[in-house]
Length: 73
Image (cartoon, rainbow, N blue to C red; front, side, top):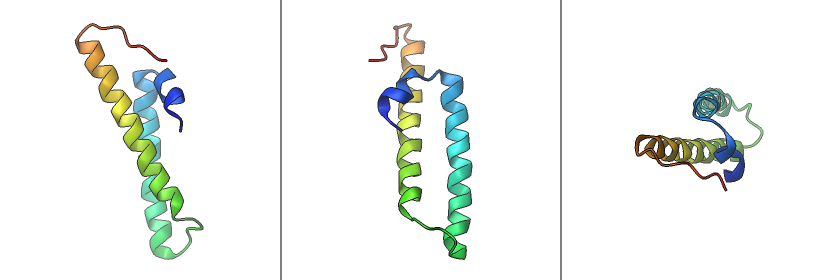
């Protein structure tokens, strides 16, 4: 997921996206153990996407607490 796409999402949408990605990551771990995973690179990409989304979520929450307008470039 691109940073521009992430910054356009609302806080609720970001939370939903994190939850769905974590569920996918959970399922990929089981597939990896069973040998059914085609590409291990998907696991690392999902981890990176979760980190990006959590970072954006924390930034939005910080701006909200400080009553500063969030700029989505």
